[in-house]
Every structure is written in C-alpha cells, then in structure tokens.
Length: 236
Image (tube, rainbow, N blue to C red; front, top):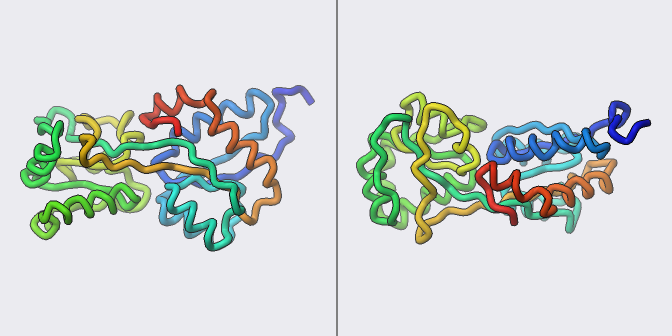
C-alpha cells in the first residue's frame, strides 16, 4: 500500500463538542493525506457528547472541555492518564452585522452592555455556566433573567445573533470567528475573561488505544499551532 493510500485503513472514531468542531476537522483532514490513521469526527453539544461516551458508544477519542474529560476519567469512561490538553479558548462577544457595537473594553463596559441589551444569547457549555456566574457576582442575574436566551444544544450562539433572537451574544471565539451575519466585537476584557481549556482523551471502549494516543500527540504538537490560532484558539 502506498504511504498516502489510507483507503484500506478503518478510521478511528471521535466525538467532540461544537466549540472545537472546525479545528478538529482541519487537523483530521491532513492525516489521511500523509498516510497516518484517519479520524472521523462527530460534533454535538458537549452534554450529549459526554452522555454518549458514558453510555459506552464505540468511540476511540473524545474531545471536550478539560473538566468534562476529567469527570469521564474519574468515572472510568476514558483511559487513565490519556487526557491531553490541546487549546485555550476565550469567550468573545458579538452583535448582529450592522448593529451598533457597545464598548466592552472594560468590565464596567461589559456590565453596562448586558444591562442595556434587549436579549442576551449564551451557550449550554462551560462558557455559559461561567457567564451566569459572572452575572450573579455582579448582582444582576435576577434582573437580566427574563432576557437571557440559552442556545439549544448544538446550536451556535452566533446563529441566534445573526437571526436577531439575541441582540448580544457570548460564546467561544472559535464558534464565532467565521460565522456570517454577525460582528465579533472582541474577547471579554482580562479582568473578567472566561477561558476554557479543551482536551482530548482515549475512550475506555476503544480497541485501538495506541493509535488514538498517536492522534492526540499529533494534535498537541507544535506543528498544529498555526491552525489553532487561525481557528480563534491558543495552543496549550
């Protein structure tokens, strides 16, 4: 078999949350062309991905927020010590294309923007949980509750902003960077930054653990730094 001919190699199977779907797809796409074990990926809401791994579905790899991977490790659903941190991802803020962008350069500016927004979109993932905790710390959660719009699992907040369902949207930058119909204003300022670390791990049911570990080593290598930055994330 020619080195670049992987037609006879059964791909590994992976599952991820939506936040890393584009990045992982790009990194996986280059594997087959260089003769390495190919990887097929399914991207769904993070809660659903974790549930399916817990239920023992036949995945070789899972890619989620690091705390979610750690929980799967603790429950024995990924191999011990197989967790590899891949990227850091910041939460960004977006408005509909053509809309006036509020000043989010300071914590006070973000708080004012939240209070003034007609509707606020946020995700079901860890960034959404952290955002609500921020509103609680500010003492405004009860006031803004009626205008909060949580995106259904697997639905990007960017789509809600583009459609007008949310006037102000908060989500991982990676999920907004190439979305149409919106304007990404910027990341949350440093004093209230919400950062999520995304990791990969080998699923306990995998029959090809060594090959799966090789994929993780590839995805964590410095050779992948440029594609990570291009997708709005920082190498770990």
